[in-house]
Image (cartoon, rainbow, N blue to C red; front, side, top):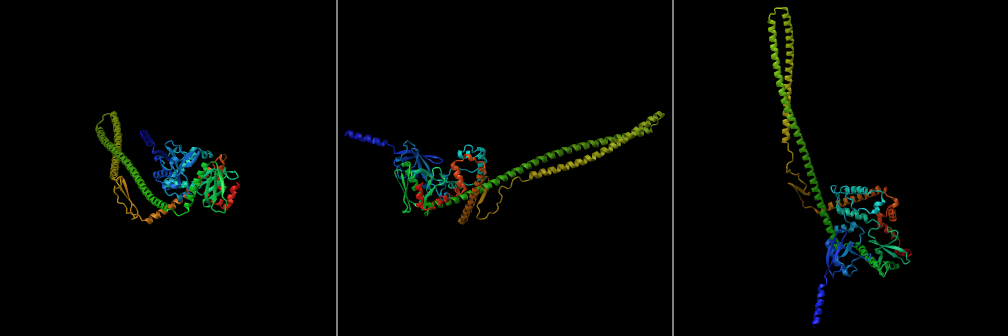
Length: 568
């Protein structure tokens, strides 16, 4: 009895020690997250948790991927997480990636987060941040592409930066969508390739994508030999390594192929089922959930549009205020310089007036002194004439003295007259200097009393009733929206759509110009077989009309295409 009790206690102790949770690491395309999961959780429980964390509702495009012995596999929704052939070492790692691709990204990707997960890493150009060398550490182009052109990294950076700056101000979601629209027209977009053999044993490639199944030559992954759209396929199944495709037309025989591994067949089947379901779903009316998401997306887009308009107006007002401030500062500096120059001119005028006044006074005193000396000389001459000279010698000397005195008196009279004229001229100069001083003081007074800034609270001009109003209070800017008519909002959205289409067209034209510009620098001898095939497709218009290429391949009947596949 005691042994039985001890056994039950031991069993109970072991049961308590078993962990009820385990750690999972989820690696997205731009971040890592860790979760504590319950042991009993299925794949759907973990997948739903990740989607909720990301705020993602368009979950049908994505999956959780892991690797088994160098083979890619996807977490099954209806199977326990730990029952998959994954490493049991914690944290158990899965990659959150796009499993299925849209046919038309612009029409199918509703949520911005969905669009962003398909395309990551983009920001707006800022000349203060994106200076020379900012792309040095970024892997913007594959090394194979860089080596294909006779261009240095600096040349690539210069062209990319110039183009980046040209699209400054474009919204991130618009830029990402333009990128996805370009990517979805490339031949290998969204295609999963698998090595297969037909019944003759010919090595081929099977391509699975959003449009259907495609058969490729192993040396050419760009242009399929034949294609089978999903709407022509009724059933897909496999047994061991053999895959069976049943066409929708029951009169057509099934066709089969073999893959390299059973595990690969499981992956092919998953991708076929998922892509087929999405293909059929796109051709039906939107579900209520999708309708709600699209309505919310439209509302969110309208809200963001209004927010962008508000920010644009605020930015414009800030820039105008900064320009006004700079202009006022410039005018203030100019007025300060003018005031300084006026002060200096006034000081010079005062100094000149003082000097002229002093010189005039000196000249006037000299003139008076000369006049006095001339009078004294005249008196001396008269005294000499009156003196009786007794002897002839004295008379001669006296006459000589008289003559010298007359000459001296004449010179003194001339000098006195000249000094008098000079005194008059100095008086006139003094008067002009004082007038210049008066004008300088008047200009300085005008500068000192001139207003340097506009009134702090100008009366704003009345705005139309449907335009939002702005209030500038101190250093703060407030923005008040008035009730906006939905019809006007719809017109704005429609106008934005037209502008977006024009931008998109302009972007395509710029891309073509860029291709033409760098084509001359391409090193033809470094082109690979895929490069040559891609160029040939581009010359035929294949890259820009991928759907048309597939459509041409399906012009023949399904029966003839099956027969063609069997004979490859």
